[in-house]
Image 1 (tube, rainbow, N blue to C red):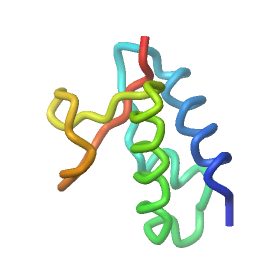
Image 2 (image 1 turned 90 degrees about the vertical axis):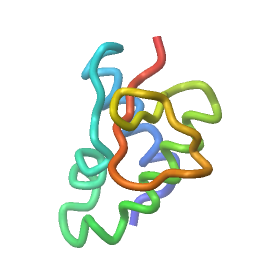
Image 3 (image 1 turned 180 degrees about the horizontal axis):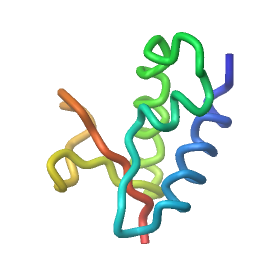
Image 4 (image 1 turned 45 degrees about the horizontal axis):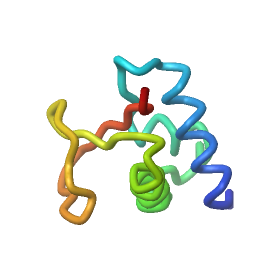
Length: 82
């Protein structure tokens, strides 16, 4: 199992590669790190994304709008901060 730093680094790396005008899906990250049983690790990837948003490194969006990370329901996207 990967640690939280590896997950966070992968999120930042993948989001940076996509660019400031595009987003990534948490499932892209989890599949890159945990190709077997990837769904099991989705909560860890979401938690890392939330920490990164609180640190000001990424923005978590739904339907193109930044969301309150205390009330996430449904699919999210992650964008690197400019």
